[in-house]
Every structure is written in C-alpha cells, then in structure tokens.
Amino acid sequence: MSEPAAQPTIKVLLVEDDERLAQLTARYLETHGVLVTIARDGLEGQAEALRRQYDCVVLDLMLPGRDGIEVTRELRGRTDVPILMVTARGEEADRVLGLEVGADDYVTKPFSPRELLARIRATVRRVRGQAGPAQQAIQVGALVLDPQRMTVTLDDRPIDVTAYEFAILRALAQRPGRVLSREQLLDLAKGSAELSFDRSIDVHVSRLRAKLGDDSRSPRILKTVRGVGYLLAGGES
Image 1 (cartoon, rainbow, N blue to C red):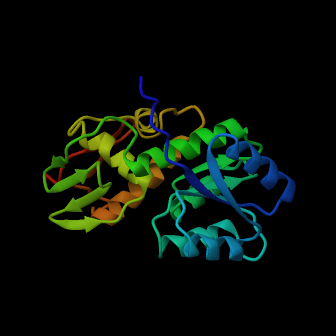
Image 2 (image 1 turned 90 degrees about the vertical axis):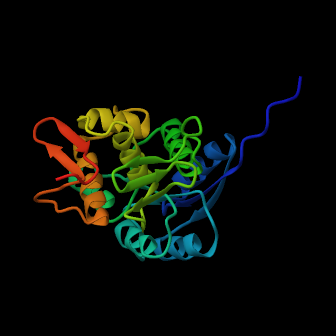
Image 3 (image 1 turned 30 degrees about the vertical axis):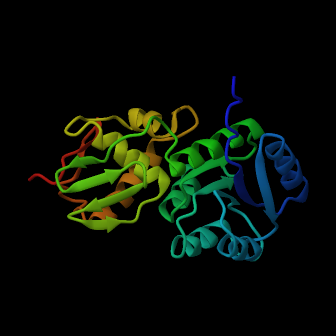
C-alpha cells in the first residue's frame, strides 16, 4: 500500500511580545507540523507579514510599538492573509473590535496550545479550500461563490472577503431562503460554536453587507430575521 501524502506545511507568523509564551507556543506548534516565525512587536510583525507569504498570522492585541488593532487595519489594506487575534482581555468589546477591523478569528488568553492549533488548522483549511469535499460554484441570484478559488462575485463584480466571511456566506448560499441562527452559522463556519460568541456573527454579517453594497437598514441580500438569525435572499426585493 502506498503511504498517505504528506500534509502541506503550515507557515505561521506569531506576533507576541511575551518571549516565554512565544517560545512555548512555537515549540508546541512546530511539534505538530507548523513552521513558526516569531515577531516581538507590532512594527516587526507588520513588516514581516508583508515581506513573506504566511498561511496565518497569530497576532496579539496588546503589543509595543503598534498594537494588534493598528497592525490588522494596516494588513487588511494590503493583504488577505488570515489573522487570528489573541487578547488577554475577556471583554466582548475587544473581540468585536478585532473582528470589525478585519481579524478572521480570535482566541483569548490563557488559551491551550491545542485550541490554538485547531483554530489555525481550521483557518488554513478554509483558505486552501480543504474544509470539505470539492464543490462546484454556488449561485444565488447575482451572487456567485467559487469554493475552489475562494472567490465571490456579485453582478460579475469581484468581492474581497476574508476566509471566515467566505465560510459564513457559503453556509448561507448553500441554504438560500432558509433562516440560520447565529449558533448554526458559528457551527457551519468554524466547526464548533463552544468558544465563540453571538456578536462575532453580527460583526461579520455587517462587514459582508458593506462589501456587497447591501443596505443595512433594508437589506435585499443578507436579511435579518429578528430574534432568529440570517438568511441569504439573493437580492430579491
């Protein structure tokens, strides 16, 4: 029998100013097939993320030089690399702010290395189109999603979305006209809703509406069913 093909190496940029935590985290990830580069402040992390190609950036919120919010905002204007925000704060507002400026996901300190590894792998699978079996393009009205290329178009106009935004949009597009609760969307987009929070979906949907040009007060594409969840209507009135 032939041996199974080796899994592609995951290249991660870890931006963390706590030297001990950075080394322990890198050591754990590297024993599980992740190639880690460490940057020790925001300015170094930003420069490194733009200098080389990474599969994921694990970015601490509180950093010297330039904090994680500023770095995320700058990177989002220049690259679509997935960003996993790390914060020591437990407040929901900090997590929401990270998502609003462009982070794909988050973990809160203290976190287990196993959880971090799982989130990195899930993020990279989404980007590489390996989250499930190969699929044909999905079309709902004028909206077209290509799971293989991770692209979205509306009226033939390309829409720039993050990996997590694509996962949410795909979950809705696969069930057009059907209302999905926040918990269902969290589960479909990430594999588990246990360590997430409801408002993360609200933030991503809000960003998707802005990118799709959907009126937040009277949306035609991503509709809110108050008290229940969201549905994809495909632009019908």
